[in-house]
Length: 146
Image 1 (cartoon, helix red, strand yellow):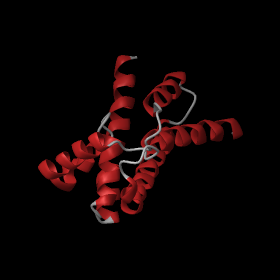
Image 2 (cartoon, one colour):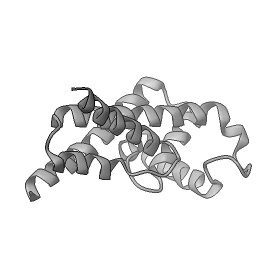
Image 3 (cartoon, helix red, strand yellow):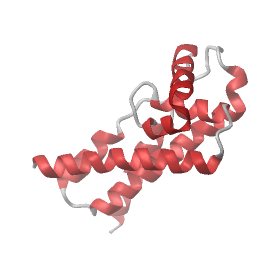
Image 4 (cartoon, helix red, strand yellow):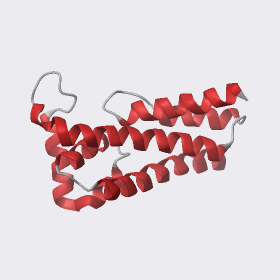
């Protein structure tokens, strides 16, 4: 039982860190745990989604309070990625947060959402839908191809 809890916590942590601007692959971690087949799929999806959404919430917070430091060498979002994410917002509005799971632009989108002061509840709903759909798609693809 404790070992199972460790698996879920590990997936949660990997998913959290992957949602921030740190490199990581929560998709690979989820896939490995699904393929092993010894964990509850619903709990795996909850752990991955919750960790990833909370990581995005961290980005939103950083965007709201730390964007004054963009352009500094240590700041984790490059001006190029920031500009690309702002372009997505200009083209698609808040609905672009449904794609916060996308490689390259997803994490900066969540930072930009904070910088542009997207309301927290709207942010959480849109990001949660996008990230849950991504993890569910991965799970279903793995089950289908097994």
